Image (cartoon, rainbow, N blue to C red; front, side, top):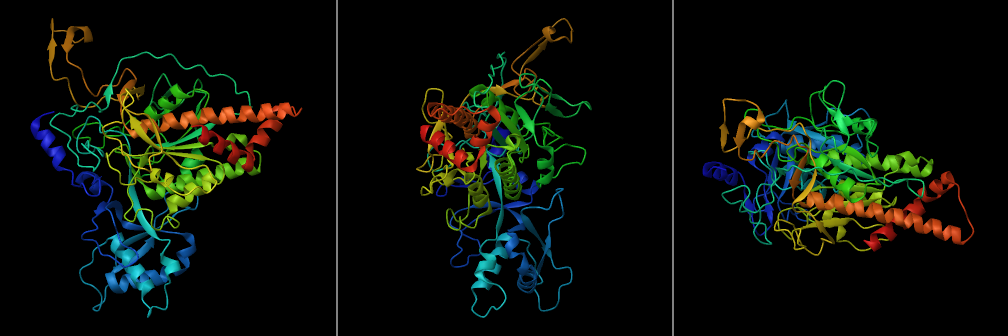
Length: 554
């Protein structure tokens, strides 16, 4: 990397080591209509203080359906005090949204006694509603109405940087527990960046499940990319990737995908597949999380080939995830699980959810009982679904959510599994977050896995010599091209990839728990037919028991 390029990328970041947090680059914030909340300058209301930075969408509030009856009163407060009105978000999914978004905008009909300078800021609006609810003179809004409301947080994928420009989300490498980034003058200085590799791996052998059903791991991530090792190929139109007939372990749920509020994209693009690999078409640099899901699924397949994968797209290729999209996806997964357990639909069951993403809350654990992401996760846990989440890559001890939900009192349900990353020699990776809330560690540095074969960015080899005037590859001698992935494999690092490794191990333990149940039944002289066995293991109580047994053995 040229020195001026390194300076440009480094200067795009702001940080505060006391919080262990690095803001997103300005182009990323602008692209997603987001900003960073700085507690030192943020408008504060007693009892609802921001104690740490967070990133959020500036014009959206998340409102539980139970509070919608007071929407008109909320709008009146915002109009009178801030000059804002709040509309329902436009429908961007087929089904009725499970997460209501209030969209803020300046009042188009201001009056003389209302603010003339209008700033559209969701945090300011939320705090104004909270302050109004606390005012003894207020007769319209109660704390019960506004307490469950929240920001539409921006979360990020937990993979280390990659090759490219300002679209990268996690560009810095913290040098100590404290989160002070120092990317250095060269992108590869600490050895954790994404790069292509040439390798041929045999497909793992899949054997028939002895208990009648394979465990299913839901991967909430970017879309799928074309890869021959995974048997994910281009569709008939030659544009997008999809599991081919030879792919027996990756599934998609089109109706579920269409029913969540997915990131905006041209209508012709199936949102559950890999989209454009660069968000900066003028430069052609690869986006930081291009190929992320393809890599994650490859890690699962290598670790536990007998597990099935349900791929759900919630993440942009620059690593950004909107909280409402993630919550909507988790609620849709809950609908699947409830249908599976109560109506004997094993084809709809999900056993593990792998989240290679996360972010920071402005109030930490305070208000977690109202946080919609926490509630959606806990609803799945109550059904015996194991949640595995990345600890993050800021080398910080500040709780990174949802992984930090692991640090809660035992409630008898399968706990959230928070995963930090190790180097190949077993030491903690330089970048990995750490703290008492990180409960599990797995290899997450210099892993090799599948990657979309069609990805080839704009970076050219630093040195190239053409011999004999030829254009054939063997007539060209050059140094390594760092963003040509036509071989179909990559080396990558991040807690993003330690997470699916643990999710796959849990799938292995779930199968062992099922086998133990079968042996116990046989010891009692009970021999069940396959359908009866699947039905018994699918019951809510049985799934809770097997999930807890698997987690205890992890």
